[in-house]
Image 1 (cartoon, rainbow, N blue to C red):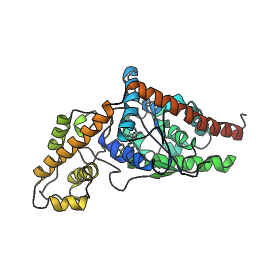
Image 2 (image 1 turned 180 degrees about the vertical axis):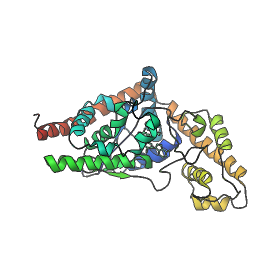
Image 3 (image 1 turned 90 degrees about the vertical axis):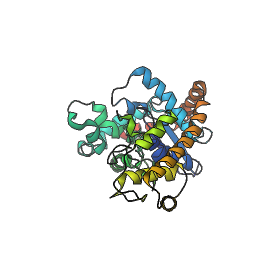
Image 4 (image 1 turned 135 degrees about the horizontal axis):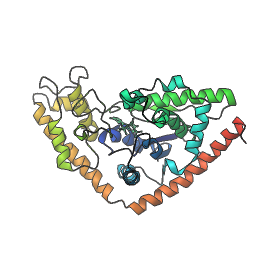
Length: 329
Ligand code: AQP
């Protein structure tokens, strides 16, 4: 048996993936696969917690997988699969709904509150129960580490609570997972409102740089992004949240330290800084899109099928163990 630590993470194919998803999640995964046993899922059953158009969803499942591959997730090293292709996820979620998850926990989830807004009574039950499905995703694979952006930390905490309660009642079925969040770039903010997270389902696409978007459009979005008062290029989350966000993006995609950028732009204004950042974005997107365009749909389908077989083998074993523990086998 492998002694490498087990990693699980996923992204919902719920919109166009943006640089927030890349910086906060995928770029971390690429690094982690060098050291750990990794499983990365396209979590399509999470995406349907809000309405999706069937034809679009189908395409996005393929495109999201291509994004994983273009970013450098290697199917020879890591398992890549589609969540709905492994039924153990929804089955374990049901069991955890009954044993482990509590209404009081779900009522605290900030993502549900944000997404449901004032419509809490009319959104789908799935949106409310999303964190329990996420707990099942993680717990099925003996996951020790869950690399995510900052917004998902609370859900991983809940998975820990659910696992701990289940283990206490039935015996040690689950490893207690831990969220790992990057120091820099754990929460990339909207380009137009630095108090809001850059989000793939944001209806205002001026807030995001989409990984597959037209490069000239992306550059314009950077030039038009909001900045703060003053003109010095310095990292200061309290007084310059918009600029600090742009500095983080520059540092990660341009592979330079924030301290170094502050020095390089000392005495220059926001205009020069944004122009150079637009070039960094151009280079990054060009390279990324070139890789993306070289991956065929057929290749993706084959990778997902190979991943499904491997994921299924691990997940069904864990599920059978759980079924026995609760007395249905
Ligand atoms: N702005 C962000 N900065 C850093 N990390 C981010 N992530 C998302 N937005 C940012 C991380 O990307 C992964 C995507 O997870 P998800 O698809 O399950 O959904 P999410 O967290 O709700 O992300 P989005 O982009 O906001 O999607 P929608 O709009 O569909 O809800 C996670 O690891 C997340 O932390």
